[in-house]
Length: 393
Image 1 (cartoon, rainbow, N blue to C red):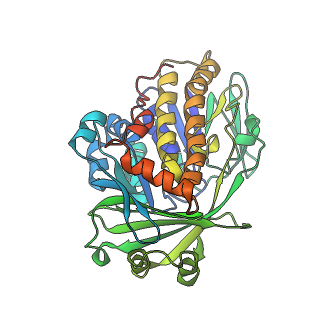
Image 2: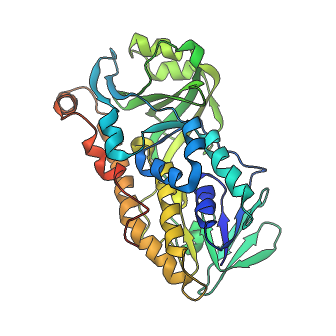
């Protein structure tokens, strides 16, 4: 079939790679001038890591991955450990692949290279799609220059501000969370003393996640979440200042403030938005994927992982479909994925409240529960053990 993918990010490229394993004619339309990804780090949990291996990316993926030794929860004011979970051989035995931290741009590179090499995939950059007209037997892609092109299937993988989403009934606006994220990098040479952990420092109304990324652990990635009353600019590249960042974490532990002092500027900040779970992902031969249909807050570290799952399930549904049953194949994909992604979206919101508790009885109860819970990460088994390669479609 002739398939269009609108958006060339992690979700769009994974979809193109998965679909290219069958005899489809695939075109990826990307607005930017080339393969690139905005943002520093991303956590890839085993549910998505196994899928990257299944696509033949195992060696390249391993080369760009940093595999943390522990996941550590710390208290904001003194860096005391609330809970430390080893990501040891038992974790690997249970989930087949490790939890991994990667640089976003490197993940996009290892996805984009094989996609570009596939004979049945065309990458079209600097191409601005403005809308899609869904139809029962085909869908029309409309471009900024007024031209259009017909496809058997159109997939909107164009992010939280998707132009495809309104075309299938998703007219709701992104929902501001009341929080902003500051992201910054510390060179490895300045933090050689730190363990290779994923660390979550939890404090009143804010938290900070840090982990190493890049080939050879080139940088420590910092994501600092703090309250924001209002936000007018929706940008991944708005710059923040060290003064502002320090002011938002005044009184935090000396170890953490020392870490801030080792940041290699610039600092970027962005507003955190999500949407309510969408009841309808598609119409006719048009559907959505990734943040275009289920954008979520980053408090489960599952945004990219869920897009990768989407791609695999969608490719499975379309593996033996033809033009006569394309629409029904898309509905099967949507049915298979809607409950899963809605659960992750909801859990991400709940984690925000859990991480941001003000000091007091509830916070102390939370810390006690974390500290006495059995070893391991069994609370996340439902996330990590999901298998997009075998789930019923």
